[in-house]
Image (tube, rainbow, N blue to C red; front, side, top):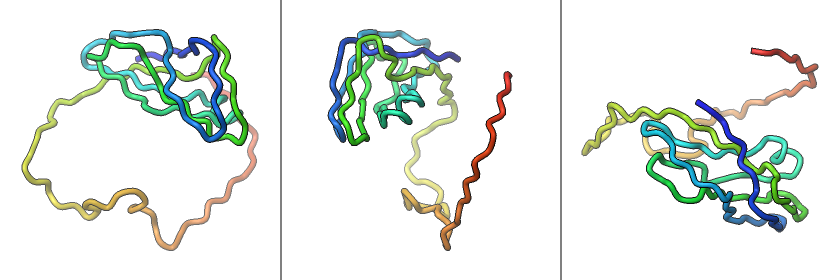
Length: 137
């Protein structure tokens, strides 16, 4: 549906290996049937090891948009006022057909969680350096 760049509201220091709840200084009202997803900015993630968490805003939330900034890097990072720190993506959501049940049908995976779909033996992935191709859609 759309994407908006979220700007830092004030200067903030982020210590190495730390995380902070960061206010953006904005509040939004999005249409029913949508939600906002807060995502990291790829350049900030790659260059500065800054991650963004806590990324779903429901349509009925009208308070200040806040996000969790995580510094995965080895050095402190200083965010300057006006820096783009995340992006907000408005997406349609369809909850039609969702219903509460007393029992679920058994599946092969069952309640096995993280890593349960890994194949054994482990696969080897070979990464090759290739020339980037630019295209416009």
